[in-house]
Image (cartoon, rainbow, N blue to C red; front, side, top):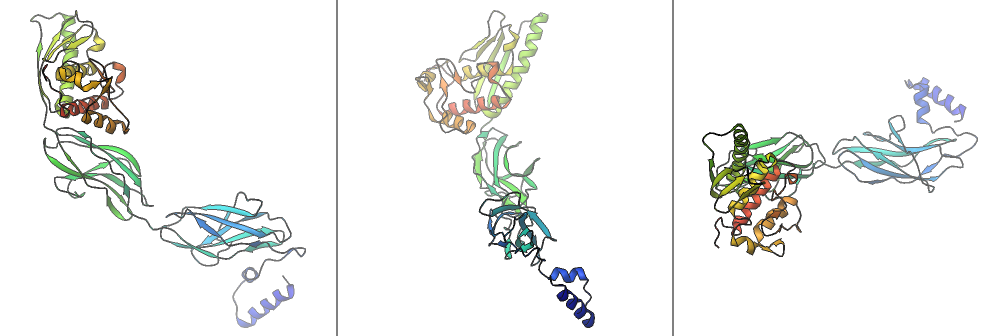
Length: 406
């Protein structure tokens, strides 16, 4: 800068009562050039990927001004004409064409920001044209649409999918339900412990059997409460599976231990079948050390041998399946065709469980899979017991009978 101009400014301010310091006056003037090198020139900024909290900003040095550009980037502010004294962000790299990009983040929704590109060479710092960026508004939360397929007599589970937070922060999420359409959180709600988007499974307990209900997923962000689509479902009738446990009058210690293990397995299996199927059956449980593993027939007769690895919930449910009609009735020979289950409802249930439209139940003359609980290795969690019962209930809808005739 010409020093005489600077002294004239100081003198003018002195006579006019100007309170600006020399540094403030200097900031009003363009940067001083060194050795006659021109300042760099910058092109128009472009914005992309604009969200509620940021954007990708692309700029370009169109003329280096005859010297190496040592840094380039943007500066921004909520007031016009920002400089590098405000919020500078230097681009980490640039292309040979002079183009560079900067990711701007941590902004506020629905806010207008003033942004200028800058470049620095030996001649000084230059600024490009100021542009205005307005961040996006926070929208309602977006949900996926899933049916309810885990339905018992008093318990259901729903798989919620929050696809988008609307650009805000999901601070609470869950489901609400009632007997009328479009329930609200003021009716009945159950809160999931986590926050944010994504998938989660949540259950409702203490429902009434054979009753129609509605549920909706909900989420709360800065806009308030957002609701997913209305989902209707009907609880099933409570199962009526009962039993007689045949025991000897004077059991040995070995028999007593086996009885205890089998009782736990039986009570647990009955809970699953009576909650997640509507089957009616009377089971006759017998402990017979001469049986290698376990077996059952469609009349309800079940036998368990001395091998402790079979005295568990998995085997108990598997054998109950045989008493219901899998592999023990004429219906089964009609249901399994060329190694595949041929009827609609059970295959539809498997597709829902696996979220795979190509899924089909496999079977032979006695067994079926997946979720047929044929081996201990098939059980990865208690959900496998639930899925087994859901498929059995679906097979009942397909016409499975617990009797030998059709």
